[in-house]
Image: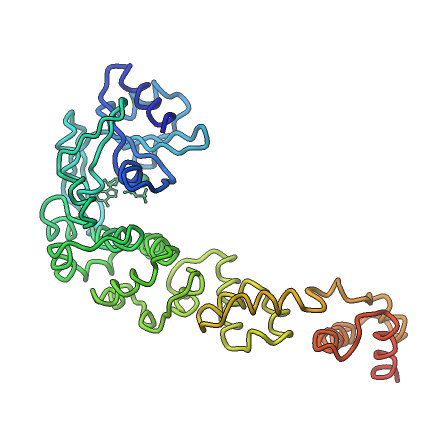
Length: 362
Ligand code: ATP
Ligand code: MG
């Protein structure tokens, strides 16, 4: 907080107005942590870059970002927005000098509460009342707001989910009227919002909201109704089965694949625990409502957790079989891993060597 107020001080001491706004103030009043700090000011990006030479302009040059003291500050100039295109972004913005006008272009009242450098709360649109009533209310007519920018509908669901707020009736009505525009949003944007909904401890409420509002269709999430409460967003994505449509990193794809494999198997079976690992089996177990403690215990009790823990090397196998290296090595490995995991064969060099000799030596 002190660091954020210091940034405000740096701007105001140069003769400009500046306030904390958005998620940071909202979360502060709710006693919740924030990842980034949003600041609104009448200083232009150019003027801000003179005050903070280390700041980086955003892609559209409409705001600047400062990364310092392990914090991320996004400073945006008071603005009016005009002529929305693609139901997402304004074609034109105009810098203005008035905080109230700037707040009017924002999405929800709880995101318009400001704080000045002396920690005074400035609440021009009654955001605090809605915060106390735990309700997501639109700034202005939500029918207009959601038609201008369809992402706001997903943001509404996201805030209702992570804050455990309700959606104002007018917001629900406006979503029903405008939801078809969600299809026009990029999958990247949609995934960002869905990730935030799915990674919330309250994700199941978000899923129910999406279903009640019929957004599963607009988001092309045909299997959303099959998702059961789980504490893993990747577990939810696994059930949704949309890797071909939504953008995932290679790492996410790999984990989703492992979870999908683990979902089809008995997650307490040693070979499945070993093959798909603790993470994928735990996620699969949480989806199937199996106690994670049992999974962790069974995993910890595995005789081996990787090939390296077997008391035999490929050199040993080659010398026992006495043939040039070939595919047979990995077949033998697969076999002894299974025997050791099922505790049919002790994990010691002599026992394993004898087993290989008996079974594989011509
Ligand atoms: P988070 O906790 O995710 O940071 P946030 O409310 O701060 O939530 P940001 O995306 O950081 O959300 O945006 C900062 C502020 O900018 C919002 O609180 C809101 O006032 C305004 N804002 C952001 N996106 C939109 C939008 N699509 N339409 C209108 N206002 C928006
Ligand atoms: Mg923010």
